[in-house]
Length: 160
Image (cartoon, rainbow, N blue to C red):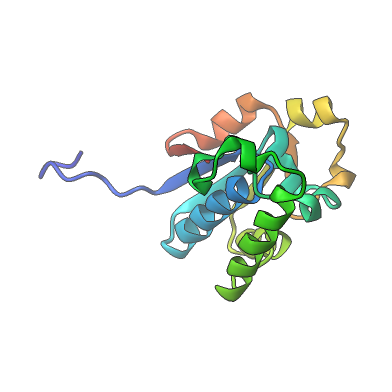
């Protein structure tokens, strides 16, 4: 807080993306892009299934999670019907396209071009057997959680 009891402006964010679904990845990308547009330093840290967004082959297979997703406002039983996830994903992808949102790789490249740091989690890379060669070129490194915390020091950490 400042002397006038005003909140100090945010100058740095580190955004953790841990979900490998469209609704799990896009919010973090939008937040990182918005931060950079406002002049806020930003880092993206992809961990667990969120690493699909930076995997050269897996990002194309990302879908909307239909089972247990209360935001869809459909019963879990209906979400479990074979093909429902693909149908909802096509609908969501169509809406994303109409809004002229970039694809996930385009978004990551755009965010990287603004100077944001993009990193993958070492523990998750080890878990899934990924190497730097499996990931998009914008990933600056595969780092430990401790290295992420050091990088995030002095800023806000946001989980999507």
